[in-house]
Image (cartoon, rainbow, N blue to C red):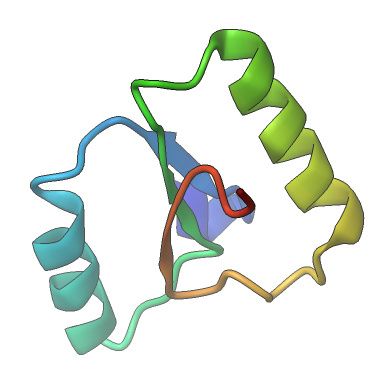
Amino acid sequence: WCEEHGFVLVTNNRTSMPPHLTAHLSADRHVPGIFILNPKMSVGETIDELILIALVSSDDEYQDYITHLPIRR
């Protein structure tokens, strides 16, 4: 769904995402990006982080990558 509609995936699933992405890429497919939530971040901090990413990133900057939040310290 994310690939078809051009949406990044935001998830708390740290375990199955790496093998899922590997299989997806092996099938010559792509994803706009996967962001893994940090359980230590508040909802507000997470929203601020995602807004920052949306404002300063190019459209394909996170394509085919898993990125753990926060991206800045």
